[in-house]
Every structure is written in structure tokens, then in C-alpha cells.
Amino acid sequence: MPAYDLCERTFEFSLAILTLWQKVIKVRGFPRPLANQLLRSGTSIGANVEEGRAGQSKPDFISKYSIARKEARETSYWLRMMVASNLVTETDGRPLIKEAEEIISILTAIIKKTKGINTKYEERSTKSEKRPPDTQ
Image (cartoon, rainbow, N blue to C red):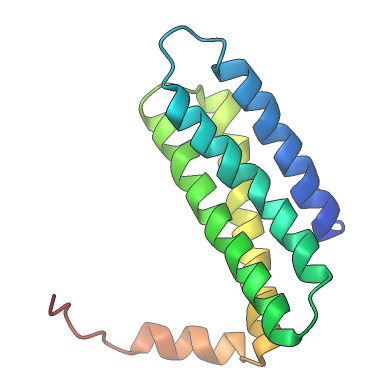
């Protein structure tokens, strides 16, 4: 998708998710809970971006954009699962996965910039640091 206003971009993405949802719920045997989960997460992204733009404070803005990013990650997950299990064709699913990943990247950059994090420095230091193994 071309670069343009994030609110418009996430709105268009929501419409594309809705179109896919309308298509898959007509398929006999398609798991409706899976389709509904995709619809919820995919349309929530734009709604949270809109709410974030009207945020009453910097923390409110960051919170809404963080929620939008989490919803975009969830949407990407459901789309990948649907494509991998052949519930959705590559033709229908891959462009939406790509757009979800681009939205995640945009939201991440906006959140980091708003928090005042130097993204280039953080990426370098994150790659060079070793994480301790999970102890749980």
C-alpha cells in the first residue's frame, strides 16, 4: 500500500479484513471463531489509532498505539495461521500479512519516537546483548 495517513491506512486495512471475513464465513466448515478473532483484532487496529490521536496525554497516546501494535501482531498471527493451514489462499492472505507487518513497523517507530527512544541505538544494543535464559 502507498504511504499515507496512518488513520486512513489502518481504516483501509480494516476494510480489507472485513472483506476477507465476509468471504471466509461463507465457506462451509471454516472455523467461525477463527474468522471472528481475525475480524476483532484486524478492525481494532484502526480504532485504537484513532483513539490514540485523540489521546489526552502522551502516556494515553502511547498506550493506544501500543494496543494497536499488539492487535496488529495478533492479526498477523491469525492471517499466517490461516494461510499456513490453507484456510485462506496465499493470494488473499499474503498481502494482508505484509500490510500488517508494515503497520507494526510504523507503530513501533511512532511509539519509540514518542517515548524518546533512539531506535538505531536501541536496535544495535538489543542485537549485541545476550538475553538470560527463561527461568520459568
